[in-house]
Amino acid sequence: MKGFRVLLLVFGFCLLSGAGFAADLKVGGFGQWWYYYTDAGAHGESKFIMQRMRFKVSSQLTDKAGFFTQFDFKASPADIHLLDAWLDVKLAPWLTVRAGQFAIPFGFETPISPWALDVMSYSYVVGAGEPTGVGFFPGIRDIGLQFRGKREPIDYAVAVINGKGLTGGEDNKFKDVAGRLGFSKKGIGVGGSGYYGFVNATGLDSLNNVITYPDSEWAKTRFGADLEVDIAHFLLKTEVIMGSQGVGDTTTLKQMGYYATLGYTFVLCQTTASEPGYRAFQPVVRYDAWDPNSDVDDNGMSRISAGANFWFDKDAKVSAFYEIRSEQGDTDIKDNRLRLQLGLAW
Ligand SMILES: [Ca+2]
Ligand SMILES: [Ca+2]
Image 1 (cartoon, rainbow, N blue to C red):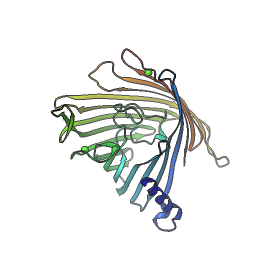
Image 2 (cartoon, protein in one colour):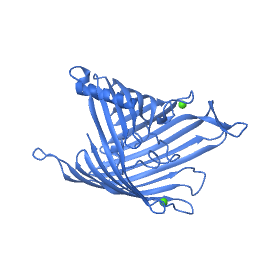
Image 3 (tube, rainbow, N blue to C red):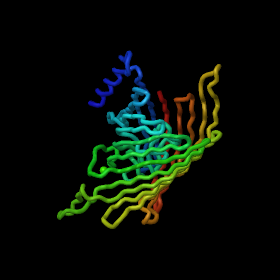
Image 4 (cartoon, rainbow, N blue to C red):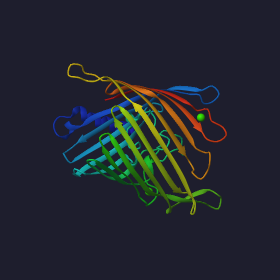
């Protein structure tokens, strides 16, 4: 409830704001309601989910400094999380220093808002929303210091972070580094990303319990490449990420994953001076795959997600996607999914 009281205080500021910097506070957010069906189990399962209810409060305090916060409300069980909290200081047109908790600047999909996802869910290789062990950036965020900027057609972001993810805090003295360098022109963008950090070495005590050694580390690396094409209502996004992580003094776990998304937007109604409004229909298909251990054969998973988004206004859309999930090996688990979504942004 502490988070809720803080939020009330922030909103109170917004409502009561008169002159001064409080007048520049911006409040926004989005909500996503889901109907979810899976054929898993003997009889399948279906449920309604209030998937996301997010509120953002931000301000450009001066032409050089600003802040951004984003809260995530959960309906059941009731919970409020502070997802983003950062302070920005712009030192030059091509250099902004960001201090706080933010999305890790790696690859194309990891840093984007779920509002902007083309097929409702993050890919396996990013892993947000997937079971533990799937994907490289399940928590999306971390805490640290980030340097970012843009000088057409180049953009970059590099961050020094704790490396423990959204679970918060730090569990060793080592800091991780993550970054992406991008090039974009005329609707085509390419990027290369890297991550280098450390996890605590582990071992067994005399009773065979796993213990960690915060002063002894194993290296953790990730490399990624991404390509985005957005030309004449046609959309192509693809990204591959490879990673390795020490799991013993002489053993390394190698993992990899990728996705490719294709879409086309039919704009049915565009805002004009005489007729405000926007309507568009976008069929999309994505193939994505995850290999949890590249040294082991037939242990990967993949899926085809097919469906469509329909915008009935600029900030209002309904989506429907069906996922066919395939597991390598002898048996395919019954776990296909249907998701329907109503999303509004404000
Ligand atoms: Ca660390
Ligand atoms: Ca399956």
